[in-house]
Image 1 (cartoon, rainbow, N blue to C red):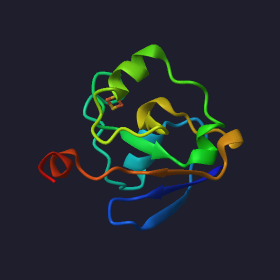
Image 2: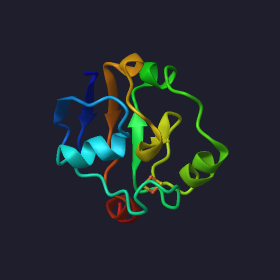
Image 3: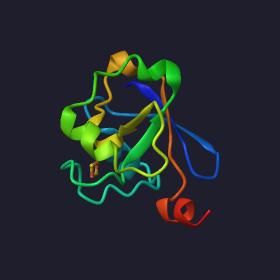
Image 4: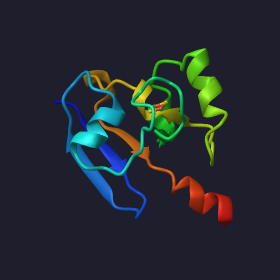
Length: 110
Ligand code: FES
């Protein structure tokens, strides 16, 4: 089983042995990580936004155009932002680390 780490909103690192082939959104849900995923992975929102560790980012497949369009709508977009529902965890991605951005509404009022 590949390992991966979520850095959650409080800054805590949550390390997980995750089943292969699930999306980061599905994994987060299984392990009670607070990620919204309002459209259930159908590329119609950007609430599954995650910020990928810079080194790990290079290991990911390039995002589709649809994903890029949705990412443009995400608050707090960074150079290594991706949508969690579009990344499938595989053995090749063992050790992947992603950070969950702070809640969108907090960012709006900061
Ligand atoms: Fe909506 Fe990922 S859950 S785009």
